[in-house]
Image 1 (spheres, rainbow, N blue to C red):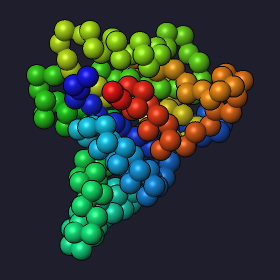
Image 2: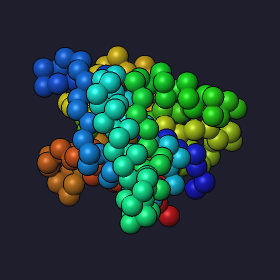
Image 3: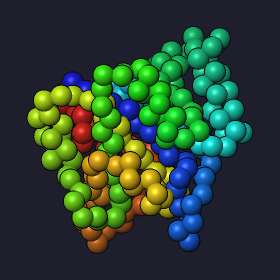
Image 4: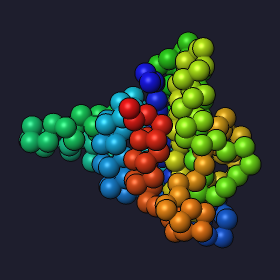
Length: 192
């Protein structure tokens, strides 16, 4: 399936264990590993969303480190993968930038949730839905950090994707790292 896809990793608004809306820390592993997964599945852009200026500076310096000089020469595949990554302050910034880059394309936001929710689609159903749409837009796959995406973000979502279960199904362990979840989700949505 030919696609124009964006992955967004929300560090805000997300919740903590108590259900309070917070901003989580950005990890080097999430930046590198999800960038590489995005490159593998031909994802056009990978946005990390954090309103914390120090996080934005850190991400910018890590990306610059791998895209310039000897690191880019020694690790061109990593530099290429990281060239698709960018940190922004809010999801509104993501929408604004995509609107400027692709003014003729509508956004469809799809978000997985580790909890079963009403009206969730399976990954196969989502693939079929996207393949059958006459007018192809930008598919925005939003991933959360912390204890999940904050309820106030749900108004942005068009399609809810189901949980990722192991062999024990709903009764099994269900607490993947966001890096592992991103790889599984993109594989289920876009592998051939």
